[in-house]
Every structure is written in structure tokens, then in C-alpha cells.
Image (cartoon, rainbow, N blue to C red; front, side, top):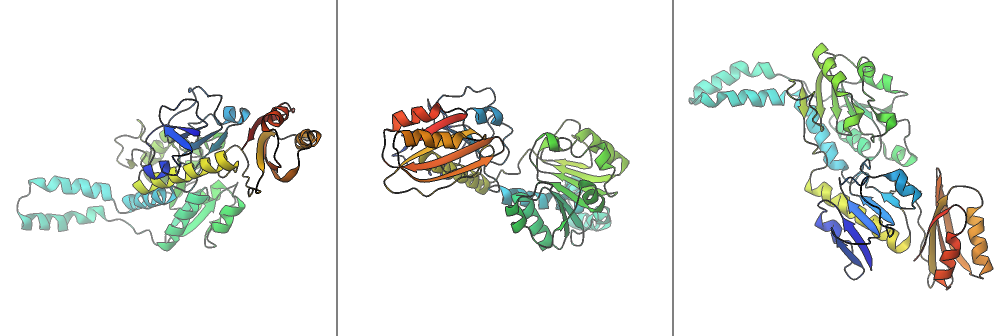
Length: 390
């Protein structure tokens, strides 16, 4: 029986992915093999000795102590792209809010409440509507920083709206590049993208390399009157510098999903309360993906969408015992583990080894054996972090 401790409200469709006959799931589960969460901060939460995996129902994992978990052999999963459609649609809404002066127009309509005569109100509206004239998205250039799953989805809908799209991503994966439309023009650096874009949107994680990526210096590179959209992470943008750029006219609008004190009340800022992924469909998609990844790892040792360990999958050989272990990515570890099996005359049926940075993970299917004794011997091999027998 596997035990899953949940944090936050997890969509029912996700929880239903855990078969009741093999899983115990709840918010007060003791000695869990896995955590399933959304925004719960785990940095100050004690780590159970039993914990094997953590699944974040969402893309960002800044609420998870990934480095510490890696040293303990705990695989951390996220759900890239599961909330992509929700974010994509909100980015489009943000561009429309800015381009069509929607907020100002709504505020104006609120001032008409004292007018009780329909003809008078109609005449007034016709007289004043020119104050809210905007511009269309068609033909404008959208700059996308981060061309992963969500960035690619934003690119597709922008192209469908008749926009030109330029993109910058210094670490674009091969898979993301295959998904990306050929109509997206790749920029060599951030400066080139900012100087060409009427709208700029971010889809990057929160990390040292992206902290205050938009600051006083980079804001000075943007086209006068450009619109900046941030539905990625609060830390990507220096809000104080943005306010100065808005006041100076460098930017026409800042649309974001992260209210900050310095932004509140500014006429050119529209801040939303972090609702980028807050749709019923998005929460269900994230929960289902996270749950499926936990099930596959706990029952088979397969890893998909981990932020700390490499992806690894292997079909289960019939009638075998499966050994998985993670280790420091140094020479000789796998050979030493295979020597342990050879010394005990354990026959290896199939195996796969994958590495990522300083870490590696292995799946080995073997003939029937004394699992307890063999696992204990493998655990003693230098640089092995954690061993499981499935």
C-alpha cells in the first residue's frame, strides 16, 4: 500500500488516478512515500524517511527544496504545459486589456449610473467614446521570452491573431524546438527582442538567471510605448523600475499576475491576483498529470517531467524483480552495482541508465532474488544515494 500525503486542494480527477486498493491518500497521512501539492511551501516541513517523490501540480517548483531533496534521492516532479492553455488565454486577455483601453472604458461606464434617460446616455457615450480608442493586435509584434510549452502555445495563438512573433530562449530544448512554429523568428539575444517588440511576454522559471531580467537597463532597450506582460514569476521583473518606465512613457502598460505595493493604484498597471492557472480545467490537468507521474514512478520506477533527475523509462520484463537506484553521476558506480549482482549470481534481464548533471538514475530488471539482502548491499556502494526494489 502506497501512501500519498496531499497539500492544498487537489482536483478530484487527479486523486481518482490513485487506485484505492493500492493507495492511501489524504492530508494527514503518516510515513508517506510521496507528497502531492500545489503551492504549499515545503522548505520548513520535515522530510519523512519514507519519502520517495514529490509532485507539484504546476510548473514552478520554487516552493520545493529541490537541492535538498536531490541529495536524499527524492525525485521532484512538475507538470509543464498542463496549465498552458489557461495561461495562454490570460496573456491574450492582457494584451486586449491594454490595446483596447478596456479598464478605462469600464470605469467610464460606471460614471453613467446617474443618467436615467436612455437618449441622453446614448448621446453622451457617442460623444465620449473616442477617448477610449485603441489599437488592434493584428500586425503588431509579440516578443516571447521562453519558448517552452507555454511560450509555444502563446506563439501559436498570437500568430492566429495575425501578429508577428519573435522569440528568445537560450536553453531551448530539442522537443520545444520541434513544437515551435516556423513562423516564430528566433532572436539571438534579449536586446534584439526587446527593441523589436510592441508586446513582450515572459514564460521562464524563477531562478538566479531570470531574477530581474527586466530592469532599468533592459527597459531602456524597449520600443517606446511597448506593453509588458508578466504571467511567469514576480521576480522576473523589477517592479520599481517598471513604474519609472511607465511614468517616463517608455512603457504604455504593465499587465501582470503579481500585485506588488509599488504597482497598486498606478493608472497604467493592471495587476491580477495570480490567476494564470486558476481554471477548473487547468487544475484538473495539473492534478491528473502529477498523479500519473507519481503512480508510474512508485510502481515502475519510471521518471517523467522531473526537475532534478533525468527522464527514464523501461518496459517491465515479465516475471522479474525491478531494482532502481539513484546515485552521484561519477564513474564506476553502475559497474560496482553490477558486481554486487554478479557476486550473488543475480541474473540481469534488462537495464537502463540515465544521467543529468550531477545525478544519475538506473532501472535494472533481474531474475528472482533475495531482495532485502541485495538492496542492502547495493546501498553500501559508494555514491549510491537511494535504492528501491519494486
